[in-house]
Every structure is written in C-alpha cells, then in structure tokens.
Length: 141
Image 1: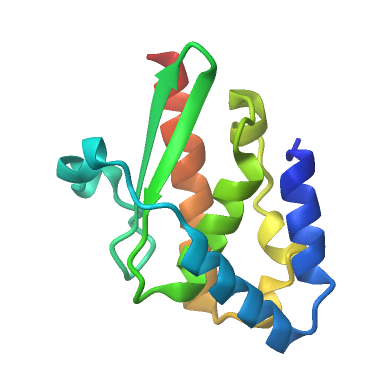
Image 2: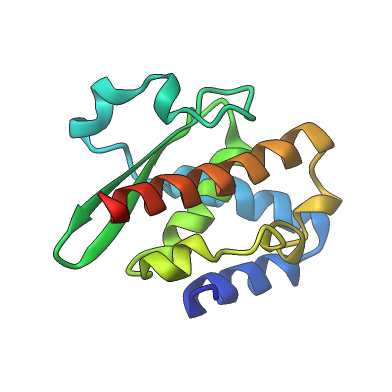
C-alpha cells in the first residue's frame, strides 16, 4: 500500500508528456537531501544497490517513530537520483509496512518505462528491492 503522497507524486509524473517527465526527474534529482554524515563511512558492498552501474547506497535506521531511510546517489546518475528522490519525498513518515509493500509497478505507473532504457529500469527495480530489504532488516533488529 503506497503512501498518499507517493501516489500523488507518481500520478503527477505520469500525467506529463515524456519530455516533461524527464525534466521532473531532473528536478527531483536536484532535491535529494545529502546523506547524513553518520552513514558516510558505511558506503560498502553491503549497502550498495548491486543492479545499478552507478554507486547507489541505501541506509535505514530505527527510532521510536519507526524506520527512516536515506540514500546516496551521485549527481552523475540523474535519472536514478530523481527516482530515489521521488521515493524519498513520497515515503517520508511511511510505516514499515507501507515501505516494504511498495509495488515494483510504481516504476511503470510513473511512466518511467517510456523514457528509460532497460538497464536503468533494472537499476530502479534494484533500488526498490534494496529499499524493502534494508527497511525490513532494520525494523526487525
């Protein structure tokens, strides 16, 4: 079950023509928050999204409010960075259940299959898979 905010963002992206969709992804890429310093030394293979050619790292931490997640995506990977930023913005405050039940179809629903190649699509699926895993493992710890 996606969050209402993520649903709204995905619908907004899907309603754009392909050129506008790319521009929106680039706007999202510019708005991804910097990785908190406490995760900087943890950028290793165990936190990397393996399916991405670019070094993409995802982290999660538990607090009394639930589980929060963070990402490190290089500026040189703007479409993946834009997708990660869209996910981040759309899932802030989401429950563990909402995060772990995100549908892989969110990529298609956003209209990204029309504008990205198969390699990047595989990377986006990898981002979702890794996000679900890190959130689930963090919640269980």
